[in-house]
Image (cartoon, rainbow, N blue to C red; front, side, top):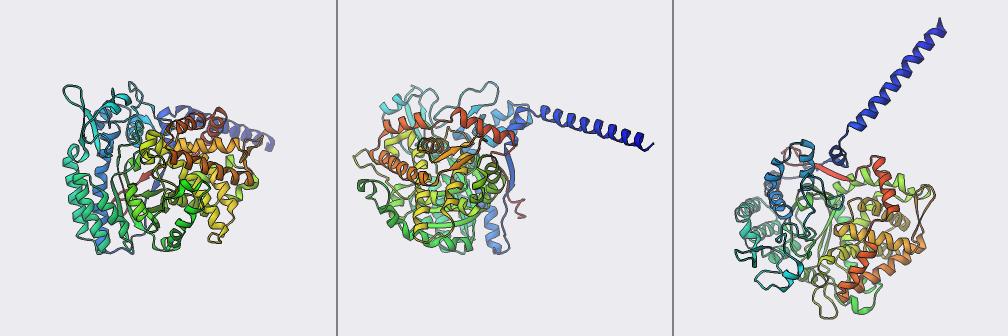
Length: 545
């Protein structure tokens, strides 16, 4: 009887297990392509400790989020055009959700591949230029505001090109933003923040941002902060010249910021020690730069599209950089979320088990931080009369600049280790840096950061900075990585200083690509259900305001 009971129990369990496996299998099959795409983003709630804020500061956050939210609509126009028309043409809710994540019908994590039926390739110039405009036509044309960061290029009734300033195209929206920034300024008890908000309120009305950028650099003791306006030029992949609207609402982490403050004093010394000929390091970086850690409580516009940034380095104005330096903003809460939910799982799959001990958040934080600091090093103006590096390298400028910041950031970490300023094992930084390439390249190789990642990966591979084991894991060769780090720094700085457009184009064509073998390894991360990036639960309600 016991034997019969046992057999019946065994059969029930077996059938039950098979049924469960079948259900799981059916559920996997039932997932649509769009659901799989959405699952590549892991939800993260953006919060911060608001208990130390004053009543006025809490009120300011609400107002600043309202102003930031307007950036979403402006960026939609810049990257695509008519958001409502696109969403209304789609019946499937999952597709609509994925459109919202990408701010358009192109998958930002898959080289801007279109995913909405009937939609073609994304125009290189997004919606900043007429779709039928060629680079040759633009270069040959002469009209006011042509090369401004803050104009759209359009055709008149005769087909001729002309420019319309952002503040004219978005007159209604920027007027509201300006009023909200002024409203927030009246609540500010910090004079530096008050001045910045007042000047930024004026800047959005006339697209003259330098005065507010200088004011932003001058304020030091503020607890709240907002980055808002047309800022980065990555969305313009035709010329890399038109800035896109975005916003971040920030709360400074005073304790972490105090730890970082003294590093900026080393910038002139680090500039002199760059591994490149003297001609390429004659510029002196501003020492009024800031290294600060923040909790970010709201992303909007360009900042919120596709892959999310975890650190920013601003202002981009070269004159402000040379005069005042830059502020390096580390978005600590977003950074920690990516490390825990994405970086560590990636390392478990792709990093040699003997080196997993070198994957640390402190190294991830330092690598990310000094990437932003390194934007202030090197060269902003060519040495041969070709103008600024950005002008000379056109659409390749952003990719090479990101590559420079990545590699010089690691160089800075190394130098600060040698000075005793950083005390953890430098091997932590190198292995975490390697794992970081895998994390970042999953965003795709079409944008500036993706191209920079692939150039670095393929260069390191050729120089033997890492090896791939038979089990598909990667192992850093520490001595060779340090040599490759110096040599790649020299190459990038030389290309920038020479304004060598053809040389950079060749580098991008040869090394800015994802090879089949690497793609196979990246596919293993997808099969392991490791998310590619984060999507935020954010806003006034989430913060309890």
